Image (cartoon, rainbow, N blue to C red; front, side, top):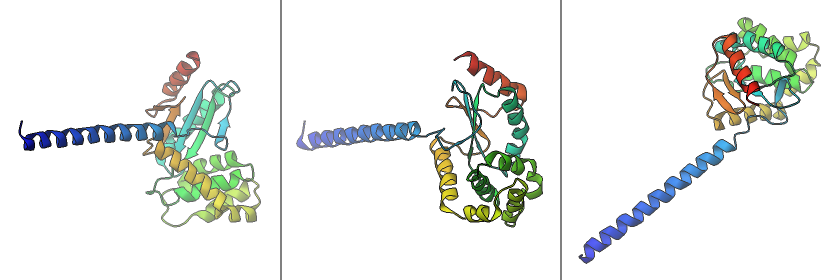
Length: 214
């Protein structure tokens, strides 16, 4: 074999080794990112809680999303029927296409700082038609909801613009992105991503299967 041929083979071998190394690195990096996606943390909002921790349903939601509003009654019915048997966690993923989605997420977190996340969660979804799709800032609407559920309104206004509310919302968004969430609602059952159920019975079947498997 000529010197030039030997040099060519050596270069090709080096390139091949480099590509393999890069592939392994990318694969490992991807795995680490995926395993690091914390679907449930201590500060996440649990709308129902099971002491045995056998079944956990996590929803990434956008309060302005029409599909989330359609699923909302099913989720509420599920919560009532499986109260104490499953843990139901909700996290934020406000979509850029919805003008007041981030404002609504901030409102929920500001309410949470006064121990009233669930009443604000209910207000936002039950009244979505009144503020959803608006192209102007509806923060004052959310201040009115805060008043209706008995919050300290001055504190609520301050918290809306505060760093803690922003941090909590951004933490949820980062977790959603790490888990591959691209739209809402997105559900995870015991860490496994679901296709969004289209009926209450479909939801029930998934939950019953998870309960029976544990």
